[in-house]
Amino acid sequence: MDNARRRRGFEAERELVRKLWSKGFAVIRAPASGARTRLAAYPDIVAIFKGRIYAIEVKYRRDNAPIYIDRTQLEKLIEFSRRAGATPLIAVKRPHKGWKLIPIDQVKETNTGRIRIDDEVLNNGVSLDEFIAIVTNTGLRKFMK
Image (cartoon, rainbow, N blue to C red; front, side):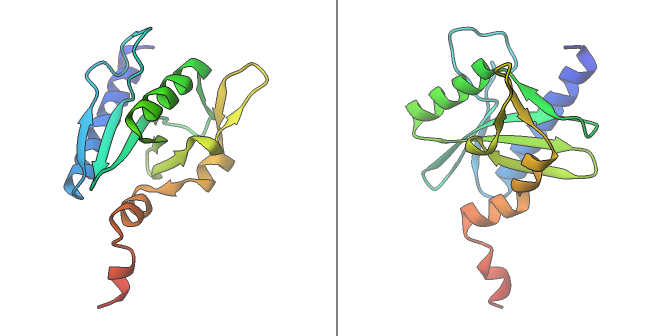
């Protein structure tokens, strides 16, 4: 991966951390995320809200091309989530389209064993604002004024 893509990925991770933190989540960005760790299973971000834990793999894509994830990366996210009692999610950031959060049971596996996230999968995900409203139960409060 070239340095520019890597930098954009790190910037997306930091942006998501800031947004979740500002909405009341306890959030950490895993210092080893993006590193070539073979044995450890680290998600990019761990976000916690009132005891509910979310293990999040972050992806950034400038264009509308599908996103591919290696099966082993997804398996590590699942294993970390199992050990932590976390909900595993994939967060995708696209410029001018914002964030989409996708439960891992909604992703598609290709015949080569890679995971594919295309527009159909993204359209079934929830926006960051929707995710925050669901988790913090702020959705109904907006309408009860």
